[in-house]
Length: 104
Image (cartoon, rainbow, N blue to C red; front, side):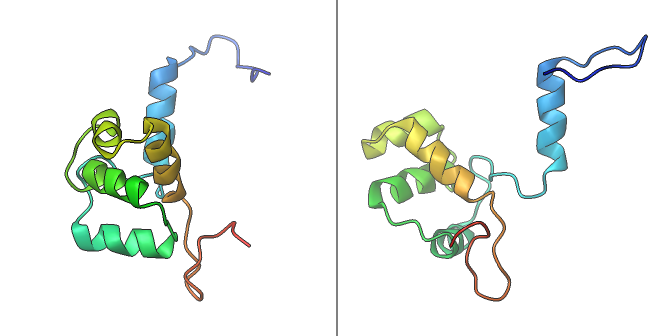
């Protein structure tokens, strides 16, 4: 379903809309090479990631700055595994118990 636009309004290109959405989200997944080793370790513990290959590939992507495809190939996993794990970091963490919100 498309949203109705007011008459005479110009529609933004999709890329511009998506970029605006990403800027508005304060809890977006971290960018490549933007996380320190200590912060990465804290994220892994808080979000309870357990797959060693996935964690190694995420570290190569988020800490070392490799692309998702190269980090996945080096770890021997599919790039979608890195994407799914990185999206877990978008969830907020409960300040009381430390669990990601949305988990049971």
